[in-house]
Image (cartoon, rainbow, N blue to C red; front, side):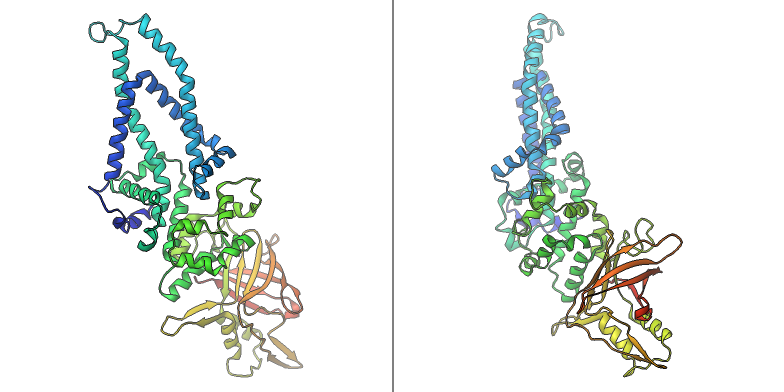
Amino acid sequence: MACIGAAIGVCRGMVAFSLFPGDTVVLIVLLGVALGALSGRMAGGIRVVFFLLALGLALGFGHLLAGLGLFAAMTELIGFENSLWQLLIPRLLATVLLTFGLVLLLESLHRKIYLHYKYKYKDGFDAGEMDTWEYLNAIWGLTLGVGAGIVCTTVFLSWLYVPGYLLIQVRPSVICERVDPWGHRLLRRICMDLHDLGLESSVARFGPAEKKFFEAADTVGYIYHNYSRTNLYERHRFHQRVFGYPGISPMLRQKEIKAIWTNSAFQKLWVDNTNFYHITGHASVAPLLRVACIPSEANGTSPLKFMEHLTNLDLTDYQKFLREGRSEVYQTDNPDQAAVVGTWQLEVVQTYDRLRRKYPTAREPGHMDVLQFLRHAGFQQYGIRGKVPVRQYDWILTFTDDREMYSTGRFFPTGPLFSQLRQMVRFTEPSLHPRSMLWATGRWNEPVSGQSEFMVDLRVYSKPPSTVQIFITPANDHLIIRFPDNFNREEYVFRRYEF
């Protein structure tokens, strides 16, 4: 929830009328206490006690009923069509219905207690001061009603805080906010006032959302507000971080997800800071959002792997990666992760040194041709006149934690770089593809006992397609990729990708 303070600072101008910071929350609390006191005075102390008991049970067990399809259908029926509301409204409906159901069940018990004390012990309470049951019951009702009003107001604000927190994180530009639904603006205002009064931590503790919800909201909000950076270089680098995190790379290979992040029209919605409900309502997003919010086998488009990766995604580390370009989870010296998991780029100078040590007498057609070739294979640089040029690494290896490995770029070896004719070794410069593409895919295996090399059987999408087995040795946050004998056992060095 650390992001809310910065987000609220830009939220001040959205409400035309304000008495003082936190005024909406104070008004809600006063109304809640007044209604609680009035209702308690009219209902009596026993009914208030039963109501609080029913409310406590409903809050504790309402989430068990919320998973029923009935409440999901009711949520859409009353107008909450966005799938994100399925995280909150079904549970709210279940809690409310369970509360009233328990109150109705306890009403018969209330009648028995009421008649018992009214007629059998009518004058048994503090004779001379409170000699009637109705007076005592009403006084206790008023007192407990104030407490019930405070409890209900706290619960009410805690439930409003959940969607309000997300809406604060994804507040659109001033122009777009003018067409935001009034309910969205009101929720932002209430959430902002809770922050001004220092109550956000308290209501979050009593709310229906778990810690992961707030982490997800912070992550989405950070992406939403940084995706449209005006500096071309910074924007490109941030986009690489969004899609380059090792923990989400398996999801990006699924066709449903790939259709989203390769859709230029959809990407423009983020760049323009379009209203968030327009983004979540996009035809490509809505089905996946429904799967995430209503996990059920009845969803025909439910990709189980997508849900598994989404559940296991470390959002705290992902946020760190978005800010700094490095991950503490996916690093070579992390004992909980395989040393190869992550994204790697060609280390040009070290690769060149290894090749020259292997072929000390090799001839190059021109001065430093091998080094120049590796530089062109390793990255390309392009830009628009007047803008900072974008440096994009081309030859990239990605290892996922579900043992997949793939290589993208403009080059992948389909044979040795150096050919040997009699006693002469020559550099045979291969061609580079004009644009980046997927070159090879395969599955990696852990080293066998007593060895340090990983092994990958790759399918190379050359013409014609071929297969090759490579060996990988981690070494001080680098990978040494060794090709087989028919590649002259040539080695390439890769290092962690610089996002």
